[in-house]
Amino acid sequence: MFQLGDDELTDRLAGAMADVEDRLREAVTGADELVDAPMRHLAAAGGKRLRPALTLLTAELGTPGRDEVVRAAVAVELTHLATLYHDDVMDSADMRRGAPSAHAVWDNSVAILTGDLLFARASQLVASLGADAVRVHAETFERLCLGQLHETLGPREGEDPIAHYIQVLADKTGSLIAASARYGAVFSGAGEDLAVILERYGEKVGVAFQLADDVIDLASDSETTGKTPGTDLREGVATMPVLLLQRRAAEGRLDERGAAVLERLGTDLRSDAALRAAVEELRDHEVLEEARELARQWARDAVAELEPLPAGSVKDALEAFAGLMVDRLA
Picture 1 (cartoon, rainbow, N blue to C red):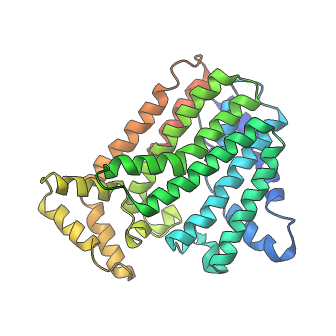
Picture 2: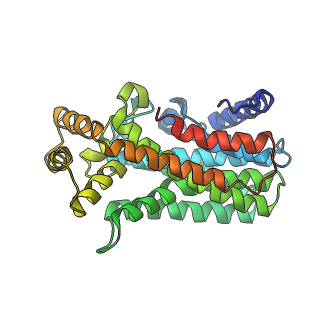
Picture 3: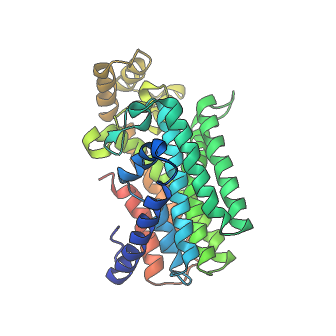
């Protein structure tokens, strides 16, 4: 569990998270013997559990001990796990959370169907929380799909590629983190006004988190991240550092090193050596620091959304949570 500045609060959240973990293990087993192994695969590999942690944290603004809060926390993590199975197939990623990805262990069909099954399990939990929860879950899933489609199709002619990419991040990552924050407020009885504030906060935290991941993907090794560095580059997906280089080129202010990086990115990166060289060149360019600062700015903007919240340990912890999303960049 994250250290959020208040030991009593951190301990309380850790206890609630233990309950979430127990229920998560139950939720990824029991379909039948044939599919239990792929269903448990990513959940057993661990992970940050950011989304359920945020649900538990925002619930502290109301009555946090309610069973509905725990069910919502499990549902958002199951939904997140489902998207990871699908993402790894689309990205041809060999590793996830330091372990072989599901499609690498089994095959694409098994990975996709396992993701679908996990989403079904999440939907069953959400259905137990009422019609509004079902609506939020459905709208969130729509945004998750739209974000992936827009990433795959790319920006329309004349559309700003960076604005397009930020919207992709808001849909693919921000929407589920926003739902996580909302659920904690709603099911703890904190009220709709706070839920709306926390949704806005959560979406911006999600964008900050993903922008930070763009940097970490290039600046860290696979042992640190649990993923193969530069997978998006190999698949031709331009993350923020590459988009910043492309913007400089379009504006006629790209330096010689940046031009060399873009030239390399246009070559065949299927071999590990070629991908490693591209990652190292991009890692050494100043656009990586520019992307870092952009992540930090989104985290600051998320914190600004919290201004109407009452002062206290929960608000402080939410501010710390936003900071944790980008402190990984140090």
